[in-house]
Length: 325
Image (cartoon, rainbow, N blue to C red; front, side, top):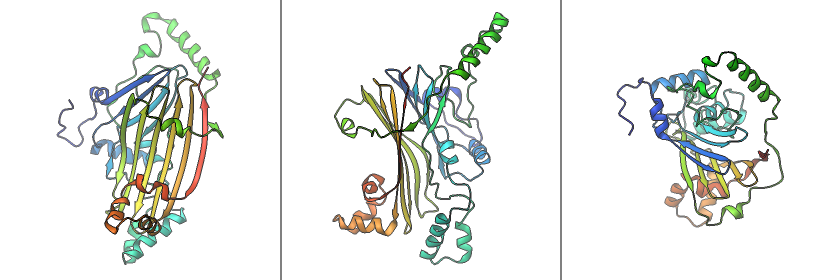
């Protein structure tokens, strides 16, 4: 059990906490892992903001991670809060964003000072375009530690021979470096083969399931912006859904979904990215047209699952990678 932390700057999580909070499941040549820990403390938040160059949301789960690792190749795709926020626009050059900010201010009859408070030199709606972090490492490992925590060092036994072996350590290291440099690293490429939705609709037993939150903001009590990851594993296949849901009241609604589908037998990974967007009032009107009463519409506007099919797609990509050697 994780002990109580009394100081906001006390080092957390410890290596033991990271291990306890990490759950992994192996299916074929893949290991699916997730880690859930409490909201980040002041020290890691300050470090993250300094590295990102922007303020982070009110609720930031900087230690949470979901990853899919292919053991033979070392190929990994993971989702973490830092990289998700790093994919947020850090400039004020997005004119669409500025227009939304002015609309937001006008709808509340705010002063010009209020507008200046809203339009900041970064995307304050945290509308990330994050599609996951892909890496290739030949070194067998567990789920990597979070970027801003007390992470355990990598055991030297995984990297090379001990110092007692003398020059054998350096020779082995050189051979490993050559092998890594010459090996072709698997990469996503465009594909026309869609994710088999019908197979995923089958009532196959779920062997592993988790839902992990990366960050959430209430946008100064004017909506919500949240990034979450769901994963479910079956015997022959799995699906990961990473979703950015942003609702700015009286302005706009956005949903950006990244789906990762894995065929365990074929050792093939498909990634689909879909961005949807519609004006706030248009979404509300569509919900009313479904027969919902006004109170039910208000509730539905808070649930991405209930409005996702109502939003038009503004961007979509489909790509895959084969990991079979």
